[in-house]
Image 1 (spheres, rainbow, N blue to C red):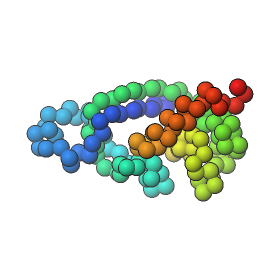
Image 2 (cartoon, rainbow, N blue to C red):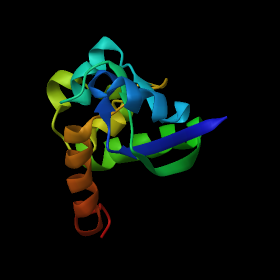
Image 3 (cartoon, rainbow, N blue to C red):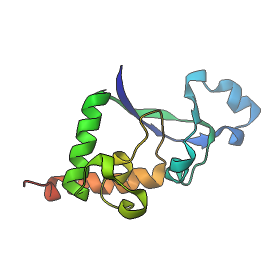
Image 4 (tube, rainbow, N blue to C red):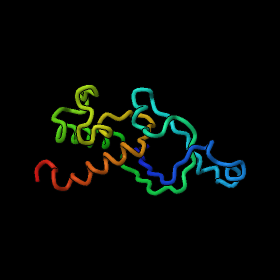
Length: 132
């Protein structure tokens, strides 16, 4: 078993669909989004609930959880200056890649606002990467 990251487009709350739209939507397009309370703000502007997505834009198998933990620790040491185990949300919130470093080991979701912030982090990665 490994880590899988999925990206969805056209995500709308299930309750926004008409009865006819609900019947016509394939079952696999329904997505229940739940985050542990500590990570609830990362869904913004979404909130826990059932959503329908228009398209699965990308799905990547990242590798083992062990590999992801090592990568997360590298990100933390390189961009925040502390091991991932020492990340403190009160102190390190807003740092590059924070939402990937301080991420639950179980299923969790990132909303559009956090995804955009991380996109900016990755855009700067090539130019700001430690060791360049």
